Length: 263
Length: 263
DNA sequence: GTTTGTCATTCAATATATAGAATATCATTC
DNA sequence: GAATGATATTCTATATATTGAATGACAAAC
Image 1 (tube, rainbow over the protein chains, first blue to last red):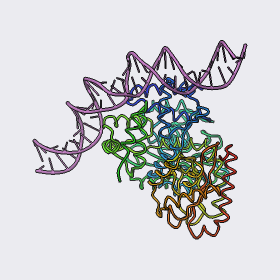
Image 2 (image 1 turned 135 degrees about the vertical axis):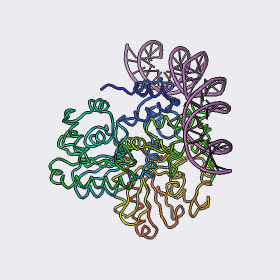
Image 3 (image 1 turned 90 degrees about the vertical axis):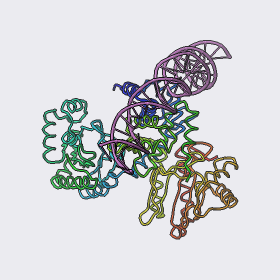
Image 4 (image 1 turned 90 degrees about the horizontal axis):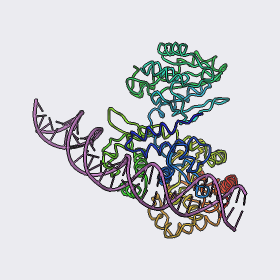
């Protein structure tokens, strides 16, 4: 796997008037990805930073309790300060609060995992609320990121996001599916998503797993969020015909509560 | 209430080699505290930043998806990026993982709320794992911060933290309790905490609420974490004699699992 | 419809954060 | 136990982030 962090970071640093912040964010993301605490050199090398600069960034982050430093091993890791920020975000997030009861109900009623996700442009989506039914389920945690155009939510974003086709095609080409659809197939499914108001992924993203997604608007224009139901193949199939309208209805109710409207 | 954010920020900015990062962290904390999205001026004023600098900081944070910007209203708020970081922190946090089963069991068995907290020096503690029993309970969320020396955990930190008394006295003076103990009383309770290995707060922090806390070490020296049980007065009293040794045993087991040892 | 005030944003001079070399520290190897 | 290599850290000149003033945008008041 090639590492493009240095390039994207270099660009962000270049046209920012506060490059230290881009560097800090890159460090946080790197430490987040890492399986274990990292020494200065590894961080600097990975991100293409000068070690001394990287040291100053790390020291500032340690002072803010966003990064921990083990003086024994001279290694850096994420610190609990990020938790506090996340809690504050969740506390004031209207969508997460409104979506939770709805997705709890759906998860319980249909025995599937249901997510409330936030759409971050064409790049990715973030799970901001999760409900798991009992039994064997795919486990997803709040804060997890997925590529924007993957799976059922991707078809919604393509269908309702008003993006130019060239942009979609370029992004589509980079996706990793277990069982990839052709671009033509995918476009047809996007068209169907537009017609029926929700997206379906039948085992493309993960083999044997069906994903449904219905868009939610918090304003006019592109959808801001989505409700996503994830079920293991056979078990879901039986209830899919019922789940589809239930998910769509819940998403529409949320759109209304958020004060938004489609299109 | 006086606002000391500008002063502490000014100091952090001054002796840092990456002041933009201190400013960014202060902005994130301010947005986290705020009940609603804030405009540029309000942020700059509150933190004592010049508006143009503040604008550049905000733009960098927006680019990193740590802050959201509403182009309509020109207001800034926390964005979902902080969630992703928090999830990554939780994923690799040994204490949170190890503590969860233990606190779940205690919460269920004794019908109380049980927390795993991380001790951030003498300043504050952060709840990193939470277990609630059914019924009426005090609700605490992961990521919540409390002053270090307050309540039962505070007595543990004072008892086992090896801090100079002058420092403790100064910090103690600033605490807000519903029913404050005198410093002398508190010192006696700290002494008792040292003797029995766990701390008790009988309605000082919150009237009618009993809090127990037992320290956990991940290394030699000061305790790094604690297990905290929170119960509403009368209901807890009946089981307190059983809960105390159970909490202490769980904390000792965790210390062993974390590879630490009391000093 | 003009004026006034407030806010966001751009701009240009300068204080300073950063890059790269130099130094210090610490294992590891011979 | 000296030498080597790798790392963290300090130091200093310079490219640049920051500042404070100027401009632009917009709403409220008259």
